[in-house]
Image (cartoon, rainbow, N blue to C red; front, side, top):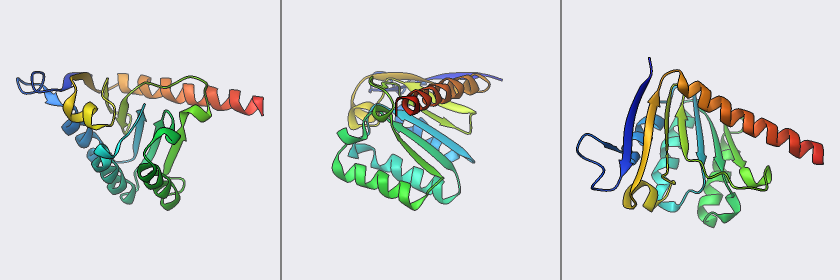
Length: 167
């Protein structure tokens, strides 16, 4: 069964039956049993609690793939934390710098748990994206989430193959 729910950031959006991006994102990460996929244009230190939740998930054995548009654009302390997570959880935490694969940006913002729940929207993992801006998105549960994962997986595979053929 497919379920779709509107999520948002911004006081005039949230309330009135619309849940906030931040709480939905936290719920998805915390509820994951086996796998989390995160695609984000950027992450800032305002979203460190998200990395904390991901760290807890990793300790439970949840596999995480995190695709960031350009890791080199991130705050040095945040970049250091991500690389530390990658070293601490080899094979379980897979950090992908999208710009290493493509000459264009990935501007998508997606968090998927267990290929069953996904939150997709305009919110970056930043102060503005999860608290201050007016952002809107959807929480999707059910079969369509598999299609979203497949789109992302196929994109990454195609880019890696293309990259390998250029070497």
